[in-house]
Image (cartoon, rainbow, N blue to C red; front, side):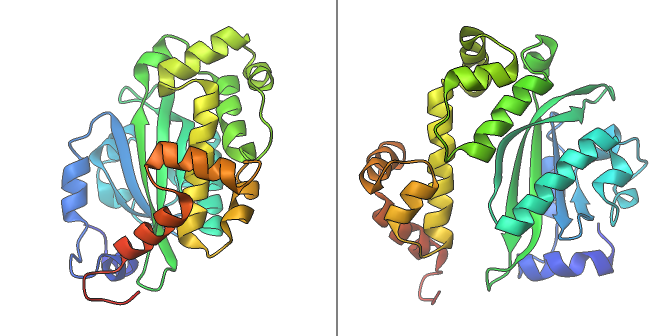
Length: 259
């Protein structure tokens, strides 16, 4: 359990729940994943047992209040810290990031990372939650390396641009056929489908978190116009952008409450 001075932001965030015990108990049973919660200073407020094992700690308490650079090899910690700063700066989740990690035997391998902002009632980001899931099979098979991860990262950084599969393959150091096969093996999507997924995720986030016009959001997220965004968005979510924005905002308001 986190010390009192570290628990204050999360107690405010969790409201009546007021405890991280239920989450720690749940994620402690996920041996192929590492779960953590960090504050805006990058300090750990909560970690799963798998993180204790992989960082060579004796207990969870040893990690609390420390940062990624205190626990992980520098190459990994630099990447984690950069992601955290980007999330706190933009408020946008980190989705499907390919990252280096340590497996249970303390050997380096690859994981798929998800990070989401944790907000108070006024919408201010207080902390983030992170779940990194091991990818041992693709790692052992040599399907993931630094250049392939760079190509996937390039999609997330430049999804609004006119990305070409041959350019992504070149970044990865693979032929187009090899790159497409690895994308399908790892994400169960073709490169084009994966780019569309990232664009739709970015559009969905902007629709909910801002009041920007849908036409502007379409251009900002790589669609040629509002009609293109609407067509693809409905194919993926079942709702058009305006309907999705209305539904998501209504879903945030408790029954009988006000936003």
